[in-house]
Image (cartoon, helix red, strand yellow):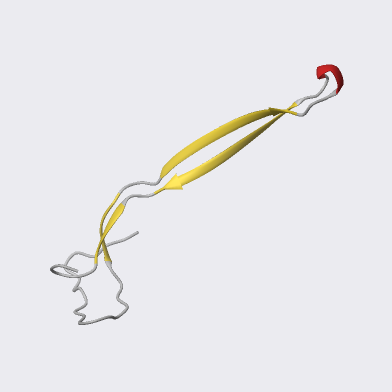
Length: 69
């Protein structure tokens, strides 16, 4: 994500598509979740399977106009 200082914001009346300007952003947050599951063999002779899941989150602010929306 990038931002340019001093970039003009769009002036819109009624409804229109408009791009915004990223005014604040932080690094991505990574959350790791690991689960282990038995693969079930006869009399406990099975192995174990491990699975890891990753989730990513971002926090940012985007300016879309000057004044109330």
